[in-house]
Structure formats: C-alpha cells, structure tokens
Amino acid sequence: MSFVEKNNLKRIQFYVTTKYSCGYLLHRNAQSIVATPYKRIDTNAYNDLIKKGFRRSGQYVYKPHCADCKCCIPIRINSHDFTPSRSQKRVIKKNKHLSMKILPLSFNEDHYELYVNYQKNRHKTSSESESDISDYNDFLAQSNVNSKIFEFRDMNELKIVSIIDLVDDGISAVYTFFDVKDKSASYGTFSILKLIDYCKKNELTYLYLGYWINESRKMRYKINFKPYELMIDDTWQSALG
Image (cartoon, rainbow, N blue to C red; front, top):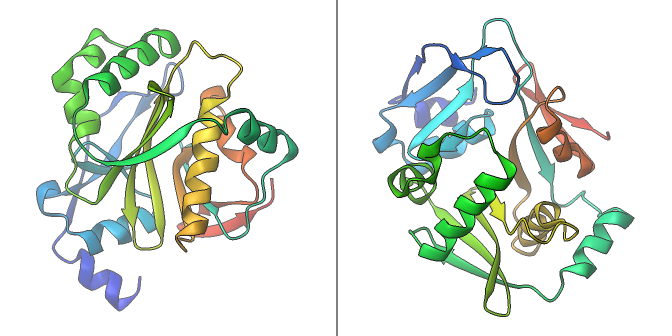
C-alpha cells in the first residue's frame, strides 16, 4: 500500500459481518468486510477502496470475506485496451437508436417500475422487500460518493438504467436493470459497452465490474469483455480470457 493510500484510509475502520446466505452460490454462507464509518468515507478513500476490490451497495462499501471460499474475484476492463468482438459490434448496431442521458442520482418513478419488473422476471426467488420503495432507495438511490444514472430510452420508452460511481481512474458499475420484454436486445451487454465507450471518450482507464464468479452462471458474462483484469492475491493481473 502506498503512502497516499495509507493516508486516505487511515480514518477508515473495517468490520466483518456475521454469516448470511450467499446470493450467488446455493447452499453456501457468505461474509463480507465492510468499511466504516460509511457516511464519512470521502472521495479519495473510496477511490482507493475500489482499487482494492471493494464495491458499493447503497451507503455501504464492502468486499467478500469468506473463510472457506474465494469464488468472488474482482474484475475490471481497461477501456484503452478493449476492442468489441463481432457479436458485441452487432449488439451496438442493434441498439444504436437508443438515446443515452446522464442524470444525477435520485429516485425516479419510471426507474423504480422498471426495476420491479426486472426483479420479478430475472430474479424470481428475490424477496418481496426488493419491490419496496424504501429498499430500492436504500439499495440504489442513496450514495455518499459521486454517483450518476445512465439512462437509455427508445424514444420516450425507458429501456435501461445503469447506476455507476465515478472514481479517479474510471467507473465503478453498481447495478444495471432493463426491459426484459426485449429478449433479443442484449441490453446488459449493450450497457457495459456504452460504459466502456464513455470511459474511452473521457480518458478514464477502467470500468470496474464488481465480482466475477465462475461457478455462478449469472456472473460469467463479465469475462466476455476482453482483455480483462482480475485481482488475484490482492494484485490486479491481466487475463486475455
């Protein structure tokens, strides 16, 4: 850890959560290490935490910390090295009619409605609380750092919402949800491609995609964006895939 990183993180303490049911791998428990006091994590400290493989959920900044499992591996894309594949170019072409707008982080009724529909269709085992406005606000509409909403529409119809954090060397993707009716549109892939493109155009190096979990089918898509980097033994390492 550099002197600057030590200085930025010197007021931050960490605690390990109790065990809870893993949201990605069946019949497994998980634990996380959480940075605190979460309401006073400043921009510089948050930048350093993201570089160390942490992730934000609402006002909490955490990292998996499971004693018997190391399946959650931080992953990021170097926007300067990335070139879309042929299939990804087709996704860009298919959705080129969508307009993109960058908004401040706030509650929007149509965003919430899209989120509820997405959860009901893509995560059918989710709890009822995930359809509650207060839980939505806690999870996605509150932040203590520099967060934005990337909104994509087809004319006036909302199609994709990506919630992101801007950090000093790139973007940390927090959560994306989209219109599940358009099954062949590949909105998830398209949103990531647009975030990479935004990084390139704004001279931001990395798109942080949270965690890649090879054992989880839902998380394998993240290695489709090549080349990518994985954090192995606390060090970012290039991987061609």
